Image (cartoon, rainbow, N blue to C red; front, side, top):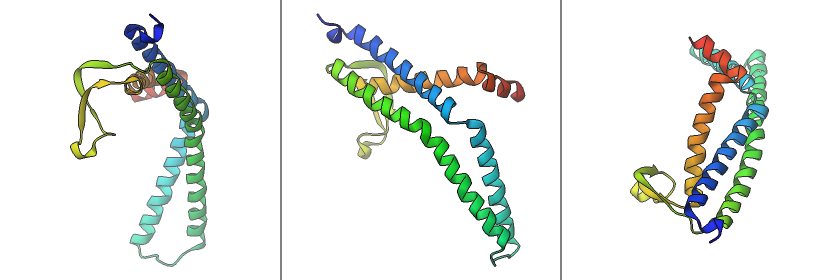
Length: 171
């Protein structure tokens, strides 16, 4: 009997791989995503939008040079925000495709049956939501990665230096 045909080994291997993937995703997001800058950009975008809404309420329909300047600044901020979001996504997607192909090849016959049903929103949109309790290798990998990612995000926000500061400020 090989390791790939042992269901217990496959379950733990897929779960640990999902945990490693979630850890990698969190690391890439923290390393390349710069959440602090994202929040600064969002606050500035909100300020510019409020100013534009106020100007339109007051009836200043004619374009002003400062409005054009703010519009140009808004576009630069949106572009910077998108770049901050795309950097970690490139590494995360590459890792996902490599890991999913490897898991599919290593455990082609893997199936896990849960004791409860969960909604799956991707398949069978005519029967929305589609409640399932049986998942293959990729389904289980995604479920384990989502749960692991949520736990890692919670722990990181509470105990890592930038997250601990937020937790203290919230109290």
